[in-house]
Image (cartoon, rainbow, N blue to C red):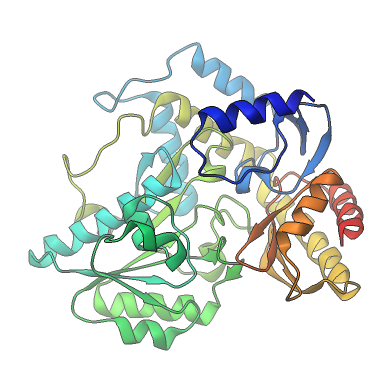
Length: 396
């Protein structure tokens, strides 16, 4: 098989930090992927919530080709046109004030942490400030992002991590209150926990945390890397709750395949945190990545992607609920929009179902220890939902 030689090459030359599925993806078209042996897969993983527009979108691809013919990189010693356009659209879509472009979601988290610490340092000149994060959260693999990731399995081999981090229970306001003191400078959380098992924040919890932040001049950092950019039926998930953060991180579907992230600040935080020389990146905000961001926002508006997500996600939820009701393997569903999790019965490994799905030409992924995660391209239709249900039923 054609795939085997590429798998063997990757195992020989690439550091083994991933336990990959034994397929080699060669190309994509619409909401389908094709492996090196020509097999077709309906993709309900979207590169882990990245390819919101699906694959081989002509308008998106043409914008990137056009930018390649102009310039790809300039460094941040100079201004560039795509960055100006992309920043304006990101700021207006979020209703916030200033954006900083990074190369990934993890880098966006690092920047948000630095902004929070700089904000607190500017207030009192102290360096002993603390950040409250959530158990079962996931914010990235670098040392800073790992420090606020509430999973001991990921953290243990790399300690000591950065100090001054405390953990509370997601959706438990009293546990957050118990961690707050005069040193607390920020509270960080995902609006919808992704890797932890698809747990949306409860409205009363998120609103309660926001109130605590306002009362104590604590910055609220919301991680929208996976749940943002239309995935829940709102451009950013927090907009449904009416709770605007002080700092927001985003990535994944922000570039729809081109590596790009950002952290976005409100006016209060932007004015009193990072200044010239405090933070930087060689590639962040480069013309190529920002051309992608610029075009993504254009397409979202022109094609009413948000409205489409609300419509098709209602159908998806209805079909998933019916699947759960008829299944001896599934015990529940939770999620928002096109970020859905099917809870698997105790004693059954979600990974086994994922492998059977691959055999049947369907890509789904896992989350937490007992959840099958679905984060498909935002352009799926009811017909794709029906096809997915038919394939998944066979696996179950």
